[in-house]
Image (cartoon, rainbow, N blue to C red; front, side):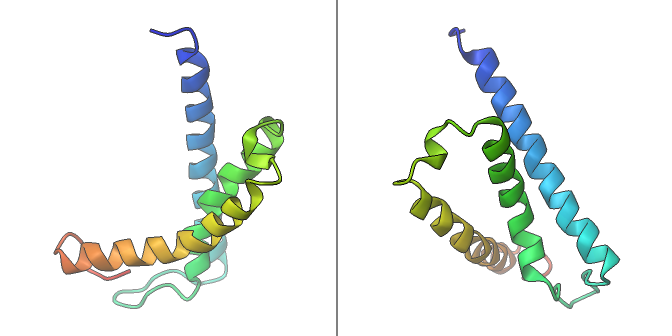
Length: 107
């Protein structure tokens, strides 16, 4: 193993955990507000299905790794683009999975 494998593992673990916590927080908010999916009806809060995990990762990165390339001024437009494209990619992936027969609903 290379010398930095433990640091890479730790960073991956922390950001993965942040992703799960962000997703859980979005689900918690949806359930408390009564916006959960019911049968064939998609969520009435599609951004709470897609953005909390990304925001969890970005927030954790801001707190723990604020000296990284992610916060360089020339990178910020790409971070914003990623936040805008995440819901679109999520929806398109779900539709593709539905059309391929891998999902029973298109959301």
